[in-house]
Image (cartoon, rainbow, N blue to C red):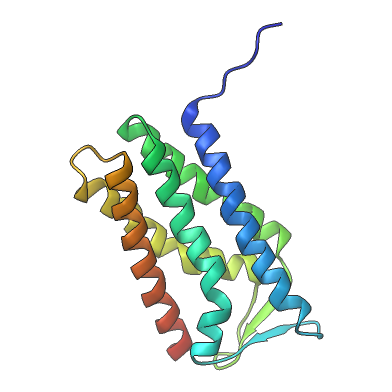
Amino acid sequence: MPRVRVAPWIRRAIEAAAAAALVAIGTLAGARLSAGGPVYPIPSGMTGALVLAPPVLALGVITIAYPVAMAATRSDALMGALAAFLIAADVSTIVAASPFSLERSGQQFGGGLLVALLALVPALIGLVAGQVVAPLGFGRRAGAAGAIAAAVASLVVLVAVSMLA
């Protein structure tokens, strides 16, 4: 029986999603294990930003930078990055569903859902930056530009959340 060949952008999307989801779920599980109660209150201020930084950076940066840097065409880069983010966000939302509460606002979210929502804007900014900065929209230069833009946007989102929520 012939071997089924999977498109390269799907393979790269799954690789990036697996790495990002492992980091996000592991970090959220570690924070959750230290809580001891049914709901983990995310501290206000910079401490809360530091708790959320690894999973938000993983979902926002890894899922965008790796598929774009390893792609052979612009469409492979776009489809791979979008698929990687969606897969990683879905897995994180399902597996890390334990409730986290934001102290100042009193809102409760599932940990994976909170991280996926916070990483959405940085991922989109990184994807657009990778397409605009590099003339071809794929390759190492586009991946690096996307990673830097997504990381900066993630840090801005985390600082904003630490001050507001």
